[in-house]
Length: 267
Image (cartoon, rainbow, N blue to C red; front, side, top):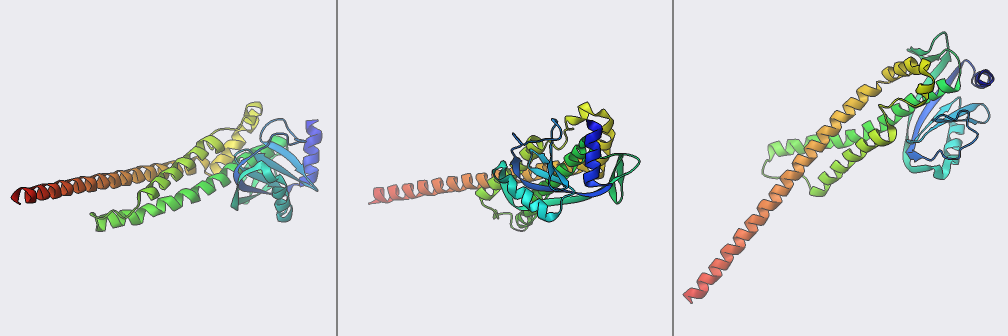
């Protein structure tokens, strides 16, 4: 059965084909999608006339041998299965070629033979890469907004150049990206299919190194820490300044009350 399926995959895809990963939304509901080519996750299905698609629950679709027009149609057909659909999709491409080993060369990902499990491994890594790319963009926007605030703090230390709700929003964005990285994407977790296919563990590790998944995750984690600490420090300063202003108001009110009392006594 496995040999027949591998032969069918090879016949449909050929010895060289394109793979495209698209981050379409926050989540994809994969329940009830049939027929699947394997009971193991991620879900792998056929796409007419001669391609395949892998659906990752964390919100990525990985397409093998499918042109852009078929891609748009397929993603549109997913419809309500996509939760939190993005207005702009993040995309990453690669070329897969059948060769003498499982590994990576400068121009392509090399597989010894076209099998369901190898396509799933490629989909896992490309899906994680495209999701990390989106999170890199999101956190970069927040990270870059800190520098001008820091410059203004240095040049005008008595005037805080931010609003409290902006800082709370930045902390919230950093927390959300961290939650998505750890909870949804499970970027550093190995897929369950490797437990049943240990011979593909080295292939997975090579792809993970090629796309620098762990290094990019570490860089993201570092930036998240900087954003959270900076925003929290700025929030503390804003609250301290507000408390100091309240104390000034109280002192002014006391002085006014004393002056009014003194005027009453003099009269």
